[in-house]
Image (tube, rainbow, N blue to C red):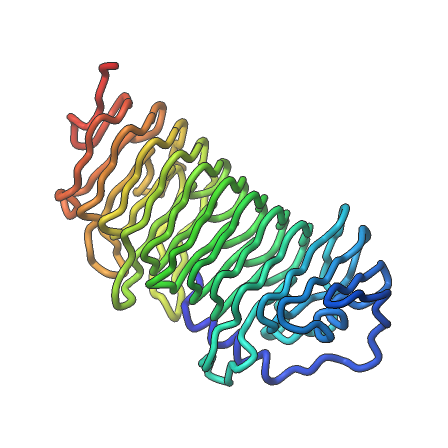
Length: 364
């Protein structure tokens, strides 16, 4: 896990780097619609757009990064549009890390503070590949929408938003991210929707940290260390009041080794966790299919649906409703609850094994 201070550092970096002059011309514009063709600058089109405008990017491969700070802007790919890294630093890059598409407020300062959120930005249709930082990154947003994006082999996160309200991540594909495929974090009033995404071969498939009011439904997560991860890592306000429903969470058996981080301390190993609530409270976990999540040696918080105390906050995963899930062939159990997390309602789940016993419903 990355420390939350990363966000402020990324934001501060946006003030210390300037875009190079002499970018290629934009192919054409009509009213507030601008069209970009291969060999031309997406950033130039974005910079010339006014609030509520649309930038259409035509099929091709672009070795570019894009920063959006304009309210109501839509960045839309038409056909197969691939965004790949460039050696030139962009406004949101930090050190050697490169981000693909970055959405941040125009008013942001060197400490990551801002006066006004960036509002109503939409990103859709891109294939964002091989960036060492984030594929798509948002910070300080309201009603930020990312859809039909394929984020592959990005170093940190595939599609991520920090400090957002009204975030919508739908119909995306994310694989090969060291941290998480889909991330919503540092959003105590999130009102976020994470729907119909496919995430595989990441550290965490869908990662919800320090968030209240997120809905995670009808996603598929497989081949990650953790399929769906709800975490209270100790920030004031904690994590909870989220809905995790209708997801298919299978074979998340990748191994993420333990890390001793100078900022966060000891981060435990993860493997074989389907839906993991780490000190997260008052959530609804319902109607999910959770199968064949089997832990690697050394990962102690494995299982199908797991409710345990967070070592970061010291808080148990309490007050949750876990119901009408189908969970089988998970080890060491289909449903697990530790001693610090014993105020949950766990009823009418169709499963084979539970720790402690008695959580599995075997009737019709």
